[in-house]
Length: 280
Figure 1 (cartoon, rainbow, N blue to C red):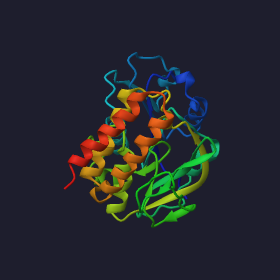
Figure 2: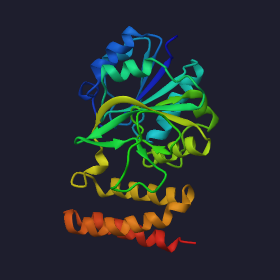
Figure 3: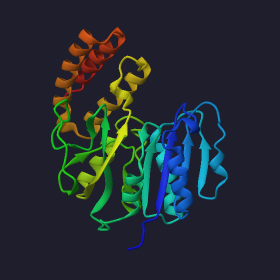
Figure 4: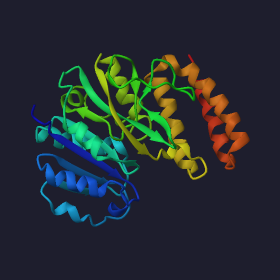
């Protein structure tokens, strides 16, 4: 069986290349398998020197205006299409890759067109955070799909997901309506509405999920998340809007009791009020 051709995209933000946890592993992999390519998109204010960029299959581009993930992924998709890569691998600086993961995605045991995405099991603080079953609204009582190909509705985080290029082309690339937050929800919803399948790999990776840390999150970042949530549940999965309203109520109370930054719970309550006014 021939090995699939992979286009990687790694999006950085205020992170230097030496500080990326998997930089050495990625560098070694790309040297051993030169038919694959890495595009590094740096959304940081300052351009940086990435020594490996001199190699033929590694490219670096900087966008100091920080347009988000979707534009970066679309650039990578264009490169993947141009060079006829089979799969597009989405990476960010908060995921620690392993040799087992790279070996798994380099061996395509599911070449069927119905399987348009392959995802590892992602953990944060020893708890699985991705992939999750998404038949119902995802809340604190989430459930995880089994390993292997599944027909179930699934949602996973962007990082370390591996996408069939021809499927991404079919859906028109990554939605600029969700340039950063909830892009993963939108993307996996496309798998569902197009009646495709996802493969859960028997691979476990560690990921630092920044949205779990209210103590270090800026109010501007949190407001961006709230705005993306509101857009998603009023424009995409409208049937889950009522359930999201209930979740915002509970989140407000929990934040009021446990989060020191008082602007956080106020922003959540404001989002609830605004979304409630939009109810049909």
